[in-house]
Structures are given as structure tokens and as C-alpha cells.
Image (cartoon, rainbow, N blue to C red; front, side):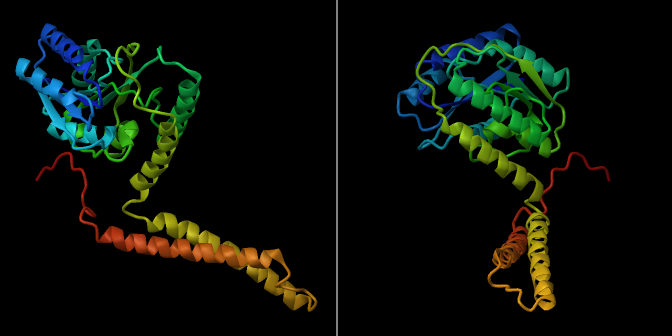
Length: 312
């Protein structure tokens, strides 16, 4: 299998026939063996019935149906589990991503040896103020924190080497950060391609302003989990110790001042209560790190590592 196309969808019944026909035409013209995984994320329209009809017309079309709406990350994760192609390409179902990009993305993975290629919708048709400005801020923050210099982390059109999608788990709302997950799994060759962005033909957008808030929260989560999931004491213990020492030093200064000046009042000083609070926070952080370390060391995957090759 040359290509697996994974398409997460929610209420996109109108666009599916045109999308699958377009993918079939492109792959056939370029002699690419392919499969299309349509992952129905709990649609309330006729999307699943349309998928069943399309499956009868084209055996390369396959479907997964969720009992309810779990989100794009869950849909991608299940699609990744099922995909068997050497190159796995993801795209949205709303026809804003062009299947004409498939052959070049395929070549970038197999010929140029990229592990992952992310699309960049340089010219957009939904370039509104409420989307454009927050998106630029979000992408700038993602670049700064991850060290991956992509212009559009949230672009749904991406291509992966098969080994990449079998080595990562996408959960929550982490579909925005698949390049980050891939990098921290050891896949360093991440590229970018300017892709065509098309105006929406059917339906309405499924994402609102809250996706930007969730995006920043997810970025903080993934940054912490990737670095400290197996050594939480290195984070909580460090900052807990620093807080405790700062509070202790402040309390020591006040105590010495009291010894040198009998009229010096400890309890009337705001610094006294601040020092106690900082010491308490430091102690709590340290204990949090200790408990997190116990949980981490008893986790089932505590010694799970991605091994590329073994020679014995």
C-alpha cells in the first residue's frame, strides 16, 4: 500500500462523495495504491450512510464510526491505528484541503526522506480577524516552545512516514501538536510545504474561538508531559526547593533583625507572612513531586522506550 488517506469528519455528508472521487482520481493518475479511512466522529447527519454507500462503489474506502463525538484527535488516533500505507496523509473532509497535493507530499516522504511534512496554507480564504490574529500568536508560541519552525501547526493536511504515526499517540486536543509529538519521539526531519487552501463549499466550520484557548493549554500540557512525565521530581522538586529556601532565607533575615533589635516586631511585618506562605508553597510542590514520582515509577509504561534498531 503506497498511501493511506485518513479523513476525520463530523457532519460532512455533502462533501464526502466529491472528496473520495477526487482522491481516487489523483491516486489513479499517479499509479499509487491507496486506501481511504473515513473516521466519523459521531456525526448527526447522514455521513455514515454516505460512507457505506461509497464503500460499495469503491473497496478502497473504509470507515470507522464513533458512538459519539470524541474530537479530532481521537479520530486521527484511530485512523492512524488502522492505516497500512507506507505514507499516511491526513486531510479535512470539508474540501478546503486539495487532494492534488497527495503526489508531491508522497514524494517528499519517500524521495526527500522527510519523516513528516506539514502543510502551510499561505493564502487563506477564511482570513478573518478573529482567526488570523489568534492563529499567528498561537503558531508563534508553538514555534518558540517546541523549536519546530512551521508556519501553520494547525493545518489538517499533513504527510507522515508510517513509522511516525505508529510511534505516537494522539489524545485530548493534541492533533495541533503532532509535529511536536513526532519530534519528541525521535523523528527530527520535519518539513513544510505550501499547499492550496480552498473556500468551504459545504456546511459550516466546526471550530470556534475556544480552540485557541484550548490550544495554549494543550501546548503547556504537552511541553510538561514530554519533558517531565518520567521524572516529575525534577520539576516540582526544583521549584519547591527554591520556594522553600527563599521563604527560609526571608524568615532567617527577620529572625536576625529581631535578635539585633528588641523592638523589632515579627508579626507586624508583611514579609513574615509572605515567608511562611512561600515556605508552605515550596513544601507542597516538593510533596507533589514526591507523589508524582511514586505514580510514575509504578506506571505500566515506565520503561517503555522507542527502539529503532538492535544489533546483537
